[in-house]
Image (cartoon, rainbow, N blue to C red; front, side):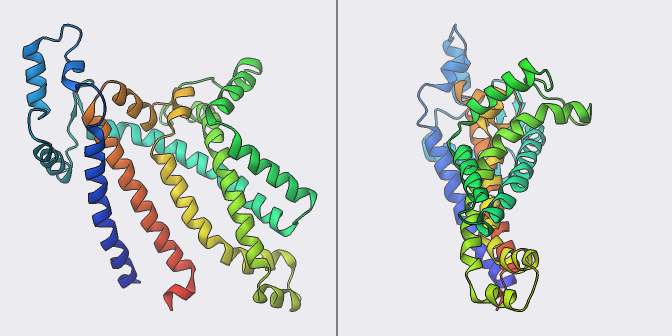
Length: 313
């Protein structure tokens, strides 16, 4: 296992380096001069010159990349000139919010998607199968922002059960926190549940037709034991990878959902930073979320290795 892990880690390091280069270069393609934008309406030339010097905008591109990556390697993502705070501090402040939203959404997706996929595969071509596929089609086709607005109209405006927007820290009021997060978590989890359902169904259909499943049934094992212990255990392997990647996508910031529900996570932070040409924030948040995505992919490979005995052999 150590050899497998080292090989995967050796592939991760150049990938992260390539990501840093891409993030920095693509950031430079944004239109407008950030120094001019941050200087305000007066655009005093002395202020613009000071900002350009402070942000190293008067240096060649490779030199500016060197300044940035050397700071990143020290854990310094730079400072937000608009908010006047270190980017690392902004990430630390927003990470718990996005992490909670992603965890709740993933929990909802797993509780809905995997059971629906199992039922759909076991009861193929039945009414349950058609219902599960209709649900998957609904989840894949429904825009998150539209579903979020409908839920606000129903549960907040019409019924008054849930707050329409805003965020309350769990340390302040756990009940209010859960009430404010349940709708955005369901909106995000709904789409992922549909993806998980389709993949679970496909994987289960392949496994249910294998010889060892037919042998288990011939031995007289109960159907639920055959499905859950023998079939699902082998079908779950590609779902592990998919779940890790989807969780990484959630952590990268559900921009539209966070905007609709006014959730102060990574999505809202990155949108505000892009509009204000706050380069340091954009680069820091995108690099952080990209690295998390790569690490989750690595962890998924490790889990795949542990679950699949053929890889260990």
